[in-house]
Length: 120
Image (cartoon, rainbow, N blue to C red; front, side, top):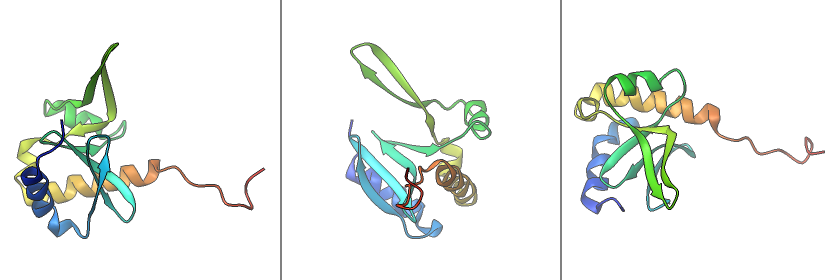
């Protein structure tokens, strides 16, 4: 389900203090990037942040679920992205902290393109 224009606008307004962000189409949703690193996505009317093994626990402890979608073979969970808790979404300082953590995580997992001198 595609996110509504109103929800997307709302999220970008909340995240405005974080700095310049870019929206892009992302598998039927909206990818959110800063400095060419996608760290979040909006699917339906839910905001998901990038997580890693170390940060995933706090999302799970808050009762949040990973992004998932249905296929003919059943539900697929994308455990790289977890839904953001409402309490974080409505607290600007917490939102900023969790967003910067997601940016750091997404930045370190971003694939590095091989240069012409390192290709073999």
